Image 1 (cartoon, rainbow, N blue to C red):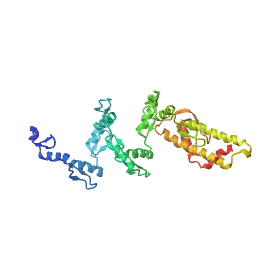
Image 2: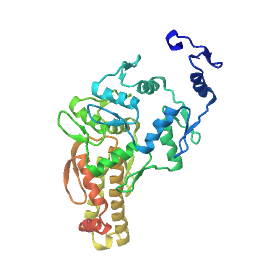
Image 3: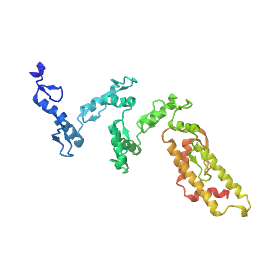
Image 4: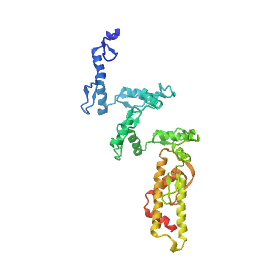
Length: 349
């Protein structure tokens, strides 16, 4: 009858909430006391309410009683099914009042708001780094502990985050779920597709704050900034000259090969000793390895190649029109024995 009349005689002494039944007040008090009387017998986790324990047990049994009628996916919780259904309806009822972006879930909006406020409430006690989300901090802590709980059952690689494992598994299955609707190229990750779409839209989201030039890819903007800073990260291991672009270092490296060729025309008495020649050749081999390593790291941020003039390989003279193809080609030489590289350079001695 109290439900019909709206009477709530059982009042919490710690907060203004009232309840129709004493049992409801008793359950509510656990939010203040922290009492968790319901314990899982399999993993010893405790819960304040019996239905929370019941839901938790599904993580052990694998039970997923809530099924989507449109795509047959199943979920352990009804809340997860409701959130999933928004993927079919496209409904995004939660809108940011600052930038008008909309979200399917309230939690997503809450996380988004931290991009405006800059709030980073989760702080690592070991290195004092701060994070916007608890899950980010949890993943970060594994960099200190070395824990990699997500293991591939096919190749035994381990990962700190479940998403990394999920993406990695696609390398075994060949799955590329992110497809461009304009040219039908497929990608392993949504971020790769997003980057690819810029080739169609012409979007250039990376803007230089010094000269206002815009770029489609972060790696290209990073290279551009060297024109302002004067940074020259690509160093020739033979003469220590520095270059802002790896293409310039590649061209420069050929001058050392030319020097060796001119050495060949000198009288034998004026030639460098074999030890010096071998040192120079080893320097060139080290330069190749350093170029390959730096180049792959430099373009790893963006999936799309950077169009430039032709790139020539100093080992086999092959010319390639695209930098990314050139880097892949260099990778083939990386594992060549040093003798193979020295055989090539012996024609200049």
